[in-house]
View 1 (cartoon, rainbow, N blue to C red):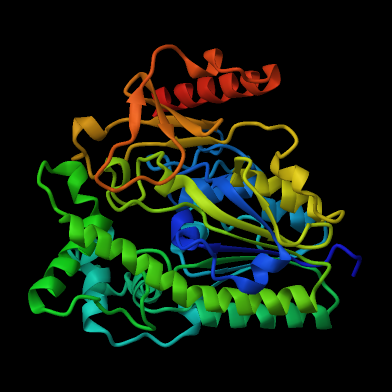
View 2: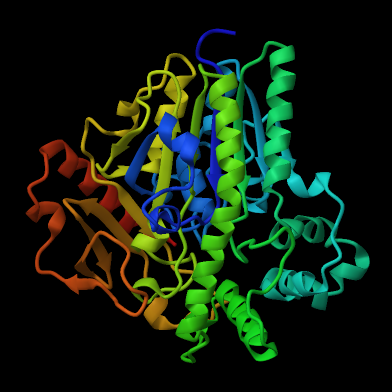
Length: 446
């Protein structure tokens, strides 16, 4: 093998930036000391499909076409795995999320995909199974149509294990085996890993359990989880979440991170020590919302909680124990990883030298045709000079960077058009104009 080594991209699904850094330290003692960390990294999309597709293609959601209402990745667009395969890499995906598989075309270019649920025995957890079976409309519909009896739900039910069991340690152990196998055969590997510990319902133990103690609070916690994943508030004027239970759900992710961070740091130490010429990236595909800026859960937002993500990059030519506050988009990981196949990685590939504002896009969630009119808005935003500039409802708004208290909506209407009014470099302005025009065209087309 040449000196470029393996390329390993690890994503903790739905992990908020402030979940990792809210206490002032990431809990990743080893990885943090051996990597460059980014404190203003933003996802291009607000849920797994558009944000992961942006990483896999280097494109914004309106360019690759994988959005809430269009779904499938444009088959004409080459993926990161396809590029690396052409460079001689064996491409392997280890996932706990069905979204990253063949369903939406994110499997293209991978020599093999190993969904973790196919490697474990199903668990007997009536409470967890209840959440999975009735928490997702698609599965409820299959149940009512009799698909369970005819066997067509088998894969769904097996895949549901990643919702009710913590499987990250199995995935990371499997990653070591994949790399050891590649070493024996003298192959380089591009390894993509999606971990679901920090995704709904936020794994606070090896198997699903509620945090509340009293019967009434357990019921309210379960009800909050149900309405959160079903986005009930988008189709009803009712208040489905009490503020204390939104905070409880937010704290579930924090506990899940405390558990997962131990696995990640041990994994990172082994990789960095054993494969010093390899590139290791740890990030999140997007964040999550628990009432932040008036929003709940993934879909349809361009908030700090939903789009600001942790990012750690380690490898040859990458400074250790360095912190960067310049805003970057994690869709630029496409360029970083692709270029690392032929030479030691350079952080300039993340756009540090261009100072191009990160662009965020969201497309409203059609909840079986029941989404209320006030939520039927596609949103565009970009980050510049300590603010997010948001196009929502045909008006530009400004919001200071930084996660706000969940009870506050921290954006304000502004006059004019920031793309033209702000003191941007001409090339950056040109790119923003092209991005916004393309977003608008795509939004009108769907």
